[in-house]
Image (cartoon, rainbow, N blue to C red; front, side, top):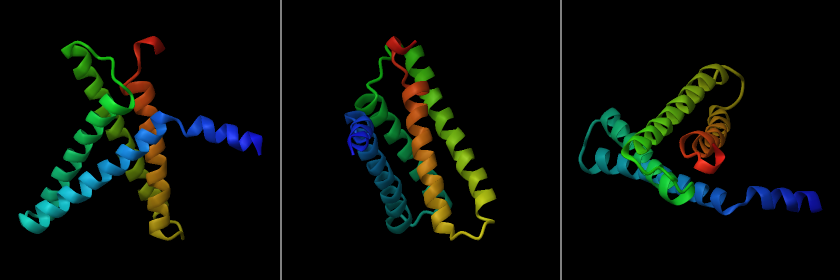
Length: 141
């Protein structure tokens, strides 16, 4: 029982709680902006979806940079590098999710279960990519 408590303390850090909170808000930005553009503005689904994804990624970048991982980037060059790393990380996990779906959707597992498993994998990968690649602190170098 003590080992479980120690594991929970290691996993349930302030950083992790903020990451999950802003991840949920990022999802709401994605779904909400898609809904508004598609339902009220009557924009085509793919255009609405593309813009919604862009807005969600930008929201995730700002919240992760400032509120979760506390970016130490000072110069414009550092900020651009950090943004590019963040976008590369998201592109990588998008490919992981797409390829994973391409393979796993062929298995006799309900598609929603496969999608949920892939989503969990992507969330975990995004956390580590953000923490150790995109927003790596100077003391970690």
